[in-house]
Length: 201
Image (cartoon, rainbow, N blue to C red; front, top):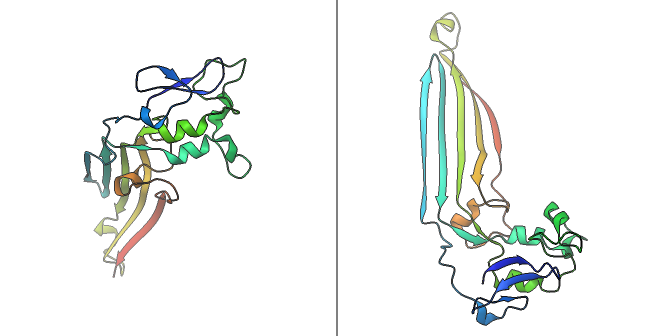
């Protein structure tokens, strides 16, 4: 059921019922299909590599497109009732008040939050993403500098994993959705920076 914002008079969440009318009290009968896929229509990866003057670069990007899901992580961050135990979103600073009625964040004391979370598309998000899975940048020492040493070859490299992700998703990690049905209680993909040295003797 479509979430259409906040009732400027009450601060409660506002929805469109099955007949296209505004309502604060949606029912199960107001549900309808969104036509959006919860599994990615497109999923894949690509990369490139280059070498010049002893320097080398190689990359791997992964992506998922045309995938939608309820952002349970963000929904939890937007629930003021969690503030006593967990961090909540700074978006709540823009919540409805009698002097701030032009907002899509309901009043902190709204009376229909759970209806909006359980029945509507309020937290339905585009989870498409493009992620730089791996970037390796390195340098191979020219052989002429090694000829009079006991080293046959030597190169240095820096490897960055998962350092860039382009997405509209507001939860922790959209990639989780491409391989599972949920997005809560899952550890997000970590960023890893590795320094390496390869030598042969």
